[in-house]
Image (cartoon, rainbow, N blue to C red; front, side, top):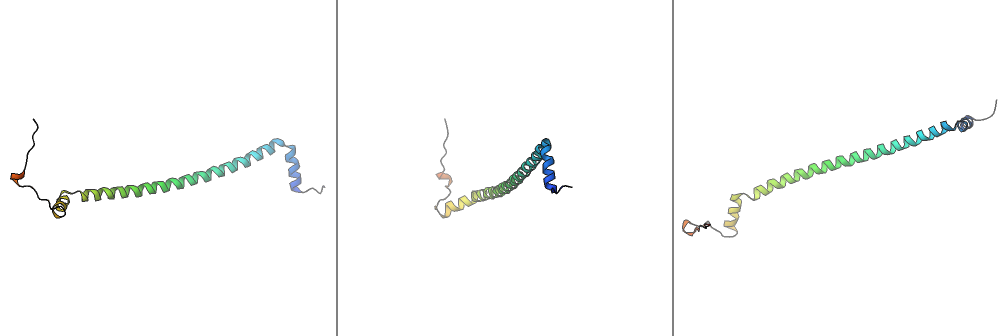
Length: 102
């Protein structure tokens, strides 16, 4: 029996079988590439989820702003502001002027 260690014997046989060594290296590189792209995919999914959440928040804010705009532009509110702040009054029938096009 030889006093060679198991890793040394495996190394010798792999060197003799160069094709097997190339396949082993190819498998290791492929595994590392798969791990790398899986990590990138998870990061992109997380980023996409954050953007969807941000889009939903902006959509809610936009809808609230539309409701506020409608409430602020109601005819009765505009009329009250014109009467109170600007001292405007609705013209009487004699003050009405009609403009017609020929």
